[in-house]
Image (cartoon, rainbow, N blue to C red; front, side, top):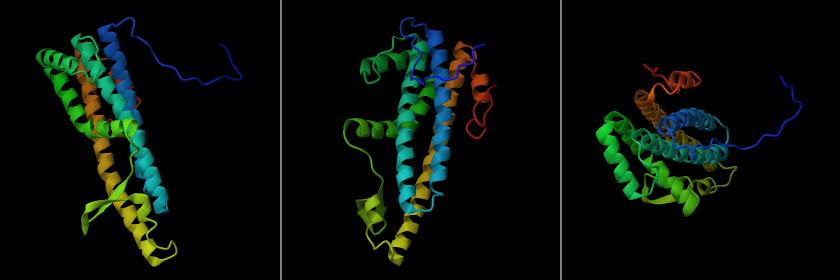
Length: 235
Protein backbone atom coordinates (compact mmCIF):
# COMPACT_ATOMS: atom_id res chain seq x y z
CA UNK A 1 0.00 0.00 0.00
CA UNK A 2 1.30 3.42 -0.91
CA UNK A 3 2.26 5.85 1.81
CA UNK A 4 2.34 9.25 0.09
CA UNK A 5 4.09 12.07 1.90
CA UNK A 6 2.11 14.82 0.24
CA UNK A 7 -0.97 15.32 -1.90
CA UNK A 8 -3.07 18.00 -3.54
CA UNK A 9 -6.71 18.44 -2.56
CA UNK A 10 -8.96 19.02 -5.58
CA UNK A 11 -12.66 19.56 -6.19
CA UNK A 12 -14.37 16.71 -8.05
CA UNK A 13 -17.80 15.19 -8.65
CA UNK A 14 -19.38 11.96 -9.83
CA UNK A 15 -20.67 12.06 -13.40
CA UNK A 16 -23.35 9.55 -14.41
CA UNK A 17 -25.01 11.78 -17.01
CA UNK A 18 -23.87 9.54 -19.88
CA UNK A 19 -25.24 6.29 -18.47
CA UNK A 20 -28.65 7.68 -17.42
CA UNK A 21 -29.43 4.51 -15.44
CA UNK A 22 -32.62 5.34 -13.51
CA UNK A 23 -32.22 3.13 -10.41
CA UNK A 24 -28.49 3.83 -10.07
CA UNK A 25 -28.99 7.56 -10.53
CA UNK A 26 -31.74 7.50 -7.89
CA UNK A 27 -29.49 5.63 -5.45
CA UNK A 28 -26.63 8.06 -6.03
CA UNK A 29 -28.95 11.03 -5.46
CA UNK A 30 -30.33 9.45 -2.28
CA UNK A 31 -26.77 9.13 -0.97
CA UNK A 32 -26.17 12.80 -1.80
CA UNK A 33 -29.44 13.84 -0.14
CA UNK A 34 -28.44 12.02 3.05
CA UNK A 35 -25.03 13.71 2.88
CA UNK A 36 -26.76 17.08 2.52
CA UNK A 37 -28.83 16.27 5.60
CA UNK A 38 -25.60 15.72 7.49
CA UNK A 39 -24.36 19.10 6.28
CA UNK A 40 -27.64 20.73 7.32
CA UNK A 41 -27.09 19.24 10.76
CA UNK A 42 -23.74 21.01 10.90
CA UNK A 43 -25.41 24.30 9.90
CA UNK A 44 -27.99 23.69 12.64
CA UNK A 45 -25.26 23.24 15.25
CA UNK A 46 -23.34 26.29 14.03
CA UNK A 47 -26.44 28.48 14.21
CA UNK A 48 -27.02 27.38 17.80
CA UNK A 49 -23.38 28.09 18.60
CA UNK A 50 -23.41 31.59 17.12
CA UNK A 51 -25.86 32.92 19.73
CA UNK A 52 -23.41 31.95 22.46
CA UNK A 53 -20.91 34.50 21.18
CA UNK A 54 -20.31 37.42 23.50
CA UNK A 55 -20.71 40.39 21.17
CA UNK A 56 -24.01 41.22 19.48
CA UNK A 57 -22.22 42.20 16.25
CA UNK A 58 -20.52 38.79 16.09
CA UNK A 59 -23.84 37.06 16.75
CA UNK A 60 -25.47 38.92 13.87
CA UNK A 61 -22.57 38.37 11.47
CA UNK A 62 -22.35 34.62 12.10
CA UNK A 63 -26.12 34.13 12.10
CA UNK A 64 -26.38 35.75 8.66
CA UNK A 65 -23.45 33.68 7.37
CA UNK A 66 -24.98 30.40 8.54
CA UNK A 67 -28.40 31.32 7.16
CA UNK A 68 -26.85 31.94 3.74
CA UNK A 69 -25.02 28.62 4.13
CA UNK A 70 -28.41 27.01 4.76
CA UNK A 71 -29.82 28.48 1.53
CA UNK A 72 -27.12 26.86 -0.59
CA UNK A 73 -27.58 23.41 1.00
CA UNK A 74 -31.34 23.63 0.63
CA UNK A 75 -31.11 24.60 -3.04
CA UNK A 76 -28.86 21.63 -3.82
CA UNK A 77 -31.20 19.38 -1.82
CA UNK A 78 -34.14 20.55 -3.93
CA UNK A 79 -32.30 19.62 -7.12
CA UNK A 80 -31.45 16.15 -5.76
CA UNK A 81 -35.11 15.69 -4.84
CA UNK A 82 -36.18 16.37 -8.43
CA UNK A 83 -33.40 14.03 -9.62
CA UNK A 84 -34.67 11.25 -7.33
CA UNK A 85 -38.24 11.63 -8.53
CA UNK A 86 -37.32 11.74 -12.22
CA UNK A 87 -34.97 8.75 -12.00
CA UNK A 88 -37.52 6.69 -10.07
CA UNK A 89 -40.43 7.47 -12.39
CA UNK A 90 -38.36 7.15 -15.57
CA UNK A 91 -39.03 10.65 -16.89
CA UNK A 92 -36.13 12.35 -18.65
CA UNK A 93 -34.64 15.01 -16.38
CA UNK A 94 -35.49 18.46 -17.66
CA UNK A 95 -34.80 21.88 -16.22
CA UNK A 96 -36.42 22.28 -12.81
CA UNK A 97 -38.05 25.53 -13.87
CA UNK A 98 -39.65 23.98 -16.99
CA UNK A 99 -43.43 23.77 -16.35
CA UNK A 100 -43.81 20.98 -18.90
CA UNK A 101 -41.19 18.82 -17.21
CA UNK A 102 -42.64 19.41 -13.76
CA UNK A 103 -46.21 18.65 -14.87
CA UNK A 104 -45.28 15.44 -16.69
CA UNK A 105 -43.09 14.20 -13.85
CA UNK A 106 -45.55 14.96 -11.05
CA UNK A 107 -48.45 13.44 -12.99
CA UNK A 108 -46.57 10.18 -13.56
CA UNK A 109 -45.11 10.12 -10.05
CA UNK A 110 -48.49 10.66 -8.39
CA UNK A 111 -50.00 7.80 -10.38
CA UNK A 112 -47.17 5.30 -9.90
CA UNK A 113 -45.41 6.28 -6.65
CA UNK A 114 -47.92 8.15 -4.47
CA UNK A 115 -45.99 7.81 -1.19
CA UNK A 116 -42.75 8.96 -2.80
CA UNK A 117 -44.58 11.91 -4.35
CA UNK A 118 -46.14 12.81 -1.01
CA UNK A 119 -42.70 12.83 0.63
CA UNK A 120 -41.34 14.91 -2.26
CA UNK A 121 -44.14 17.48 -1.98
CA UNK A 122 -43.69 17.71 1.78
CA UNK A 123 -39.99 18.48 1.40
CA UNK A 124 -40.56 21.10 -1.29
CA UNK A 125 -43.24 22.83 0.76
CA UNK A 126 -40.74 23.26 3.62
CA UNK A 127 -37.97 24.76 1.50
CA UNK A 128 -39.96 26.92 -0.94
CA UNK A 129 -39.21 30.18 0.89
CA UNK A 130 -35.51 29.37 1.25
CA UNK A 131 -35.19 28.61 -2.46
CA UNK A 132 -36.86 31.94 -3.23
CA UNK A 133 -34.38 33.79 -0.98
CA UNK A 134 -31.48 31.91 -2.56
CA UNK A 135 -32.64 33.03 -6.01
CA UNK A 136 -32.87 36.62 -4.79
CA UNK A 137 -29.32 36.51 -3.42
CA UNK A 138 -27.96 34.89 -6.58
CA UNK A 139 -29.76 36.86 -9.28
CA UNK A 140 -30.79 40.15 -7.69
CA UNK A 141 -29.19 41.40 -4.45
CA UNK A 142 -27.54 40.18 -1.27
CA UNK A 143 -29.65 39.27 1.74
CA UNK A 144 -29.52 41.09 5.05
CA UNK A 145 -30.99 40.54 8.48
CA UNK A 146 -33.40 43.22 9.62
CA UNK A 147 -35.50 44.16 12.64
CA UNK A 148 -39.19 45.03 12.80
CA UNK A 149 -40.03 46.72 16.11
CA UNK A 150 -43.37 46.34 17.85
CA UNK A 151 -43.97 50.09 17.89
CA UNK A 152 -43.09 50.54 14.20
CA UNK A 153 -44.46 47.54 12.30
CA UNK A 154 -44.37 49.29 8.96
CA UNK A 155 -40.58 49.51 8.66
CA UNK A 156 -37.61 47.14 8.51
CA UNK A 157 -34.32 48.35 9.99
CA UNK A 158 -31.04 46.86 8.84
CA UNK A 159 -29.74 44.84 11.76
CA UNK A 160 -26.17 46.15 11.67
CA UNK A 161 -27.35 49.76 11.72
CA UNK A 162 -29.41 49.20 14.88
CA UNK A 163 -26.20 48.54 16.79
CA UNK A 164 -24.90 51.96 15.71
CA UNK A 165 -27.84 53.98 17.03
CA UNK A 166 -26.13 54.77 20.32
CA UNK A 167 -22.65 55.53 21.56
CA UNK A 168 -20.98 52.14 22.00
CA UNK A 169 -19.97 52.96 25.58
CA UNK A 170 -23.48 53.97 26.65
CA UNK A 171 -26.06 51.99 28.60
CA UNK A 172 -28.47 52.39 25.71
CA UNK A 173 -25.98 50.63 23.43
CA UNK A 174 -25.60 47.77 25.92
CA UNK A 175 -29.37 47.44 26.23
CA UNK A 176 -29.68 47.42 22.44
CA UNK A 177 -27.02 44.71 22.24
CA UNK A 178 -28.97 42.54 24.69
CA UNK A 179 -32.15 43.08 22.65
CA UNK A 180 -30.33 42.11 19.46
CA UNK A 181 -29.01 38.90 20.99
CA UNK A 182 -32.46 37.95 22.32
CA UNK A 183 -34.04 38.59 18.95
CA UNK A 184 -31.38 36.63 17.08
CA UNK A 185 -31.79 33.77 19.56
CA UNK A 186 -35.53 33.65 18.78
CA UNK A 187 -34.75 33.63 15.05
CA UNK A 188 -32.20 30.83 15.49
CA UNK A 189 -34.65 28.77 17.56
CA UNK A 190 -37.29 28.99 14.83
CA UNK A 191 -34.81 28.39 12.03
CA UNK A 192 -33.10 25.39 13.60
CA UNK A 193 -36.47 23.77 14.27
CA UNK A 194 -37.27 24.26 10.59
CA UNK A 195 -33.91 22.80 9.57
CA UNK A 196 -34.67 19.68 11.59
CA UNK A 197 -38.02 19.46 9.83
CA UNK A 198 -36.26 19.70 6.45
CA UNK A 199 -33.84 16.95 7.47
CA UNK A 200 -36.70 14.70 8.55
CA UNK A 201 -38.60 15.33 5.30
CA UNK A 202 -35.51 14.65 3.16
CA UNK A 203 -34.81 11.40 5.00
CA UNK A 204 -38.42 10.35 4.49
CA UNK A 205 -38.01 10.99 0.76
CA UNK A 206 -34.87 8.84 0.85
CA UNK A 207 -36.75 6.06 2.61
CA UNK A 208 -39.55 6.08 0.05
CA UNK A 209 -37.00 5.97 -2.76
CA UNK A 210 -35.34 3.06 -0.97
CA UNK A 211 -38.63 1.16 -1.00
CA UNK A 212 -38.88 1.72 -4.75
CA UNK A 213 -35.30 0.77 -5.62
CA UNK A 214 -34.07 -1.42 -2.78
CA UNK A 215 -32.49 -0.04 0.35
CA UNK A 216 -30.00 2.22 -1.47
CA UNK A 217 -27.50 1.55 1.35
CA UNK A 218 -29.81 3.80 3.38
CA UNK A 219 -29.22 2.08 6.71
CA UNK A 220 -25.47 2.40 6.23
CA UNK A 221 -25.80 6.06 5.22
CA UNK A 222 -28.03 6.93 8.18
CA UNK A 223 -25.62 5.22 10.57
CA UNK A 224 -23.03 7.88 9.69
CA UNK A 225 -25.29 10.71 10.85
CA UNK A 226 -25.49 11.87 14.48
CA UNK A 227 -28.64 10.54 16.15
CA UNK A 228 -29.84 14.09 16.83
CA UNK A 229 -30.22 14.69 13.09
CA UNK A 230 -31.75 11.33 12.13
CA UNK A 231 -33.68 10.05 15.14
CA UNK A 232 -35.94 7.69 13.21
CA UNK A 233 -34.41 4.37 12.20
CA UNK A 234 -34.99 2.76 8.81
CA UNK A 235 -37.43 -0.12 8.96
